[in-house]
Length: 259
Ligand SMILES: Nc1ncnc2c1ncn2[C@@H]1O[C@H](COP(=O)(O)OP(=O)(O)OP(=O)(O)O)[C@@H](O)[C@H]1O
Image (cartoon, rainbow, N blue to C red; front, side, top):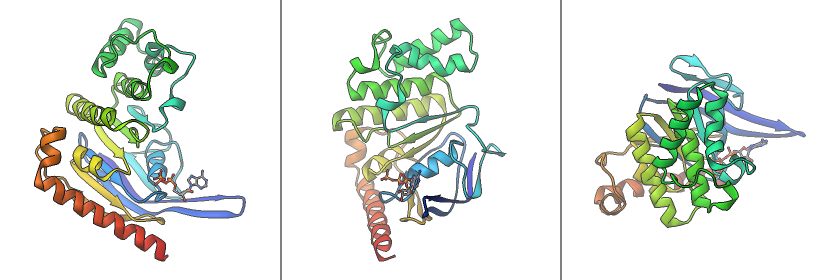
């Protein structure tokens, strides 16, 4: 279980004070898939960074399986939006995927197996020896996902990972992430500004208000577990759910402007 309890974050530098997160509390059950949406600048990245132990909260706590998160916890992986900056350009694809396993002290044979398996899973079984800059944006993001999968995390945090790829690649990557989640049983927290994506992917969608951020609504996505781009997105219930999320985000934006 990942628990965010009374989380607050204020950035203060050079005399400027930004209350990015007001007071956030929610729980993510082990093995579940939760999407987080909210207006631009409402603190989604800040929230993920606090969950990943990369940023200390100003108030409140994040706990993972009962232990307070005070630094990057073991068994947690993050996939960021900027794949271009998250891969090392001087390392080949396989070495990029291998890096966290090496750091974790996994033995050589096991590392090779995990790297092969992860690259196969993302459809890059033939790209081991390529450099990241030789690949398209979508392929680079696949490498970043492979690196996270190979590490076999218990918790995977994804921060707008498909924002910079084209629509077709994005649909493929969405399905890839759902299949990885189903196969690995990982706890997945996925931040996106795309309402349709959140409803398509998640079992729950947590909607945030504008800064200072709170939970506006925590919506259960009661669509069948087996999802595909055509049937699911054509389901009248999908349209209802996306309408509800859209209305909530519009409300949050208007309230943000009125503040
Ligand atoms: N390092 C920082 N120092 C000062 N202010 C910051 C810092 N990082 C973020 N902020 C501010 O905190 C607020 C929330 O930023 P954050 O990036 O978490 O939002 P977001 O919801 O992820 O945004 P977007 O949807 O546009 O990606 C913004 O007002 C931003 O300017």
